Image (cartoon, rainbow, N blue to C red):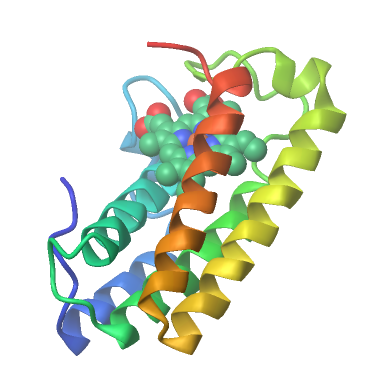
Amino acid sequence: MLLPLIASRRRIAAVSLAFLFPLVGAATAHEGATGVVAQRMDVMKQMGQHMKALGAMVTGKTVFDQETAQHLAETMHQHCEHVMHMFPPGSDGHHSEATPAVWTNREEFDARMRRFDAAVEELMAAAASGDKAQLGTEFKAVGQECSGCHDTFRQKK
Ligand code: HEC
């Protein structure tokens, strides 16, 4: 269920709404996962969709539209600020695919979240500037933060 390229204003509104109600339907986000585990999976998944849409734009697979890029980056930032509070103590297990390190190596996890947040802020700034090359650079940097964290803190499939 990947978002198609978000080009029209109406679809942008849908994306913003998806942010306002990110938790609706979250209980069914993943087999067996419920509560905050399902919620963070859902938010992560949405960030994945936004990265995909942005990636398509910066690589020229889809038409570059600054307004859409800006909405995607802003929504990602909101998601990021949300998701960093969605790993409370005791929320391992429960079908979570997080590694125990999230809770045993909390300092590094939190530091990674802050770096991720900073990278997404750069992404927003690049989107706001309308500089497509800069957006491409920041997009890559954000992608590295995603996979850098997953390397340690998300179970390998
Ligand atoms: C600081 C750590 C961290 C960062 C940064 C991070 N993630 Fe994650 N991500 C996780 C963890 C931990 C999980 C596993 C959560 C769980 O199952 O409880 C996860 C899970 C996921 C999932 C699977 C969701 C599901 O349905 O199970 C996707 C997709 C994902 N992340 C995408 C992203 C994308 C895209 C980015 C960057 C834009 C990102 N993540 C940034 C830690 C991170």
